[in-house]
Image (cartoon, rainbow, N blue to C red; front, side):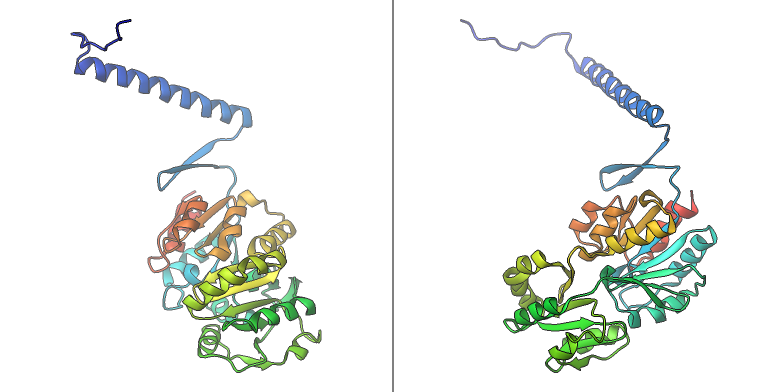
Length: 334
């Protein structure tokens, strides 16, 4: 049998090719348009098209943002650990539009209060979520209104791991940054200074006595040491706790199932705010669940590529007023 060969045709010239390409694209465009038009009619919802790094995200225009869930380090704060004036102004404008602001941070309370006061916000029904979702405080009197805590067995378990590694174990109660059974390392002392405190040495016996609520634990070590720590113990810790490498030098362990997102979900239900009415902004691995929970998850420009891929939108960096840019785009310009 003679093989079939494609022969050149006089009529198949460049003009014909252009015509066929445009004809095919027209069919694709109209099918796509009809598909989304049908979706809008079926759901009775108009959709808004957002562009994000070659990814299109459709979100409901009618679901106006009522709450901003805002990470602090790497998000609200710039690299100098300061709040840019542009962020303060944009937040105040959003609040004037009736939007609530909830700081959602891994910091303890002592590391949150000065910044919250700098924001100059007031109100009887305002909250902050701290300790990576382990505790929620009402800002009027800083009363603890919701929390999850580590058990004595949890702390004993973590202490056994700490004894097998150069990473230093730290714990957090309502007011203190605690170091278990040893003097704080230079790294721990520096980290404590970033949250406006100094480490307090505590015995394991006192930590597990039940006199104070212990919300979360952290292991601190140099990046290469923590790499080894995570490979050796990360999977083991995650079976019993909510574990996350939030920074190159910090691995955090919270009560199982506790994240910023779980605390945010609980608070949103109390405030009668739906997930699709929340915009969450963050930059690190401990922000991922919160970014995915919110109807509009925004990653900072300084986030890792992994975090960016999980977000609906990528804004500017924390040093380029990324929070202000997101607020202006999705709230002030609605």
